[in-house]
Length: 396
Ligand SMILES: [Zn+2]
Image (tube, rainbow, N blue to C red; front, side, top):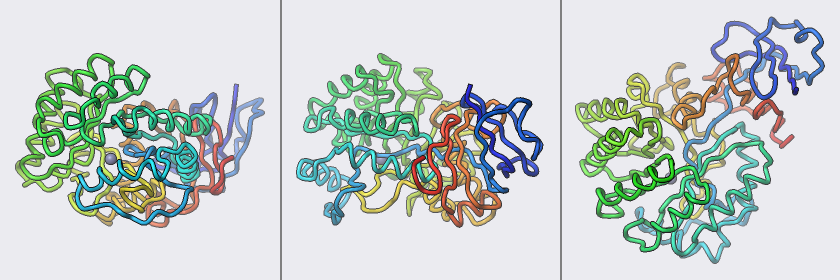
């Protein structure tokens, strides 16, 4: 039995200070401060001196395989638009040695010391890279030895129908145990949304996989695909297993269309993932009130798509908050999308911190959640499944 006592903790959503008892990876009790643990307690003790305990940060939309983190600085070289980025990424991958398990592990390490305890990563699958990216990400995750959990999405970044051979490789990835099947702009990139959805929902059904579709398409083309995905999810009874990533069209839709789509998403049990974009911000409050879970993610970090980002989900929550509003409850909503909301979107049960929840936690020197997002202080302690995995910016 492993035990850890976090003494004198300030816990988000809990009145007054408490001692947090963790046993075998779960939160066993919230105790009166100073009690010194239960009788016979012989576990590890950490004095938090009133610091704030938040649920572990969850990165609901990453592209670990693409990163150059820890390697040389590569100036941005992509052409314009989505197709410019896709082509540049494919063309320069061999020259830069992408995917690289060292870079991926370095980024994962930074994510962990910044308090991320779980990540969903899309991983490129196409005829040029095959399943190399899947293998590189798995190897890197393995090196971190349980300090972070990861689920992968087999992702047709170069398109599926327009990139012959990709469908077979996606299926191989699922056979090899990849948890989710990805899609990419069924209309805008693949030019045939019905067939695109036939293929990915077909694969999801055959392998019991979840679905996560990148939908950049805007305007009515985008909102129409929202409807197609809602219909499909309802018809197949896949509520709770489908995510739409980005969904810019929803952020830009007129109020009547927006409300209709949100109702459809809630009814079908579809989650959304967003990266706090500069434009097309999702209506986070309306989605939350309708019961649509929203996950926040860093997207690509220092890669051929963008030099920006560090992997820090508090930083991403800060970006989201700037589009959501300045009141404490707006900032808390943004942070929720990086913690509990993301966990709901990804189907992670018991993402606390409450008694019985998994002990995935991050400790910061802040008085409340809003201050934590605004200041983004150093993470003094990161706990994954009851084990201290990072302390003051370094792996433990
Ligand atoms: Zn993405």
